[in-house]
Image (cartoon, rainbow over all chains, first blue to last red; front, side, top):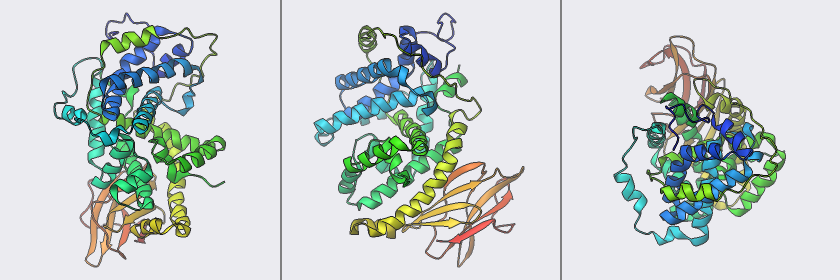
Length: 206
Length: 223
């Protein structure tokens, strides 16, 4: 893992957009650096969704291979590379969960057990990740319970809107409007908290 | 063109059912405005990833991944547009597209509610449970049957030393319901509940807010 403080890593000062531009030209170091930045977030997300570490590793590998192959088609105007990476990871994980219907299996629920002993931010170059975790969790806590519930079931459990309606015994229209309102509120909370996404979290802690 | 605003947040979370998914995909192919809104909501959706409990990836995963990379052949240069860096990072960029998009969203929500009237019985229940009302000069409010009110305000930044304050005005007079600074779309869950017929108002107050309004409301509407 490159150390951002030694100054020896030539990719050290590049933004994620810069790294991705290098990846598009086949630069393995830049790719490794993107993985070092977001691999843990992607893996944590995948484990949470598929509830199996081996399967989660496959999901992350698939997602990052897609990054490697499609980097030249990434449209920088559409947003942050990290959003793209985490969205790829999320969608691949959800597709697996839907295909295998793993949710209904409800295994040991390791994800929740791990949450209880979450070590929190570590004092390393990815301290921003700990900050990101705290801030997003705080933003989620600000949501009314029914709003947080639809986001968690949709995002982490992979429920579609009609599956949510069935599970929550609510009219589909209510689920749709609640999902919309919950996302709009989350968006507002993140803004009010002055949350800066990954690039800024990165640089502000170094 | 009929936009698909109300479906975009769920689309960003891959939570749409196949029929809606197809409708959104078809629309997105032709609509730059909705693509920008989707990009905005994808960043909100992706931020949820950070709420997952921490798991350290096995070192073999990194090795396996790097070993599996095939050389990129004749890749065209990527389009690199460094995002503007400001104190709020990604937000101003998002806000630039999101202010019109969210304004359109709120309108979309209103239109959506109306269009649902023709829909199935099940969706009529949602109409009854959420009411969206426009507040002149301020934005919109959405109230549910539980009395929970969300204010979508689109206001210039509050003057120096001032803040905006929301009020729920019922039979017992104005109740403070939260302050905000404006300067873009603000989504505010009001801290006071509203009963049907109550007014939602916004005034300009000294920083910190007031217990009672000290200025005339810049906008008010009944929910």
